[in-house]
Image (tube, rainbow, N blue to C red; front, side, top):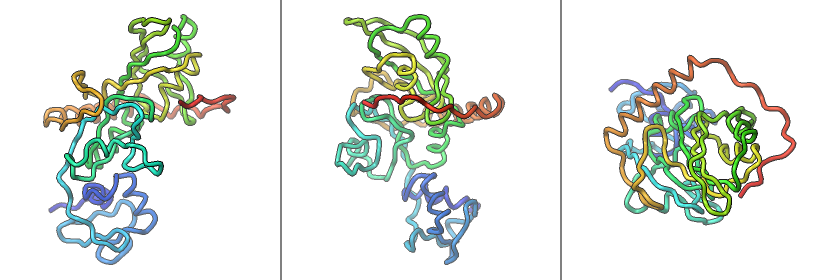
Length: 267
């Protein structure tokens, strides 16, 4: 069997995510044949003996790809110290492998979420540099005038980086003077959509993720989940590759953020 990077093998075993595996290696907690290894080391998992914290690594699990509709007031984590319900609670015991969420949907947001134990794909879909498009339907209090809509489309600094929506268009009105917007972003940063509307002067009342790259399923409702089809997995991989190529061609680093005078009031 050909050699692979240790962090990839650790992630595929279900022990943790790819990013977490890299952290464990940096901390000197991973050994191969009794020797502490460095990040980037390649090994043959059928020949070499890999241990994490002194314990032998389990055989790689069957790869699972779960599409879940996360309801509101559910944590996008594997466990929660406050014992609130998590996305993992929603898929147990049907999914027995140790999968983990790719990216985040905050506690009050809902919509599509990918869970997997494929560390490579998770890292690619979740990392901002790959530019995978995420689509949201957003209900805001009031309606944006031309100046506010221009501010929304111009973007804002979130967590020290400039976030500019790929698109932001008004969809339909609702009773009570509220409005719905369809927004596409590629950064995947926590609270980024809420922050964009906050900077434009409007509070988000409801936020629903409707697509992750090419993944979409309008028939799914809160707490429903299913396996991705082989076709969906292949299309998602192609989308990641094409997004990376576009990102590499598009240019330079974005500027650092200026000091913020006020922050989003979290819901």
